[in-house]
Image 1 (cartoon, rainbow over the protein chains, first blue to last red):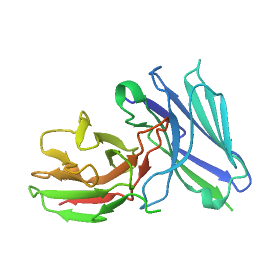
Image 2 (image 1 turned 45 degrees about the vertical axis):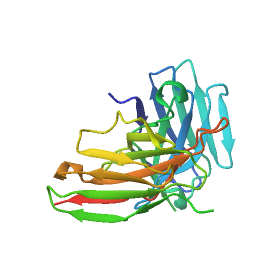
Image 3 (image 1 turned 180 degrees about the vertical axis):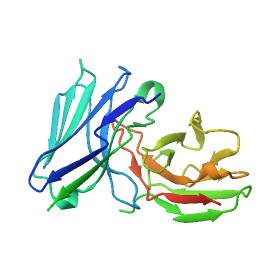
Length: 114
Length: 115
């Protein structure tokens, strides 16, 4: 059973556009929601993360929007650049009962055209 | 500072052989995690260490898989009687479990191919 559902599977955006990736979860005990960026042949790199006590977090061109009642969260990449082309994973964890293990979505392959 | 390192970066083995994969976490990180990533999928949890002990090994697929962290730093994932289905990238992550942080930092992974 997939604990975190991610969409779309792939995304093509023009340079300068906005990339939006969505995730949904069922377990209301999750209390930490990170996004990871992964380039081919590399390990996932932590991009940005949010806790459920805030609805939005912004770091540079990357913004997480969090909707606790809908159990959804999304990553927005503003002014997308070709260097952003990578696979993005959302994840969730609950420090209490699952000791911080991360449940990942299936990933979104982002391609930004120059 | 140095990040999480994993060795070897690539490992090709024959079906039925034994393999060991090594993870060096970030210095000072007490929590260490192993994940497995199949092609086109997100990482899947295998096991979590807090210090020297395995706090959660519920993700290990069967008893052919075993991991140790004898001194609370370096960890080794051991796979016996490898099968072709074990082929994947094995990722290690570490985090500082003190305070209020959950951040996990991943290594580059070991790509295991079982022929």
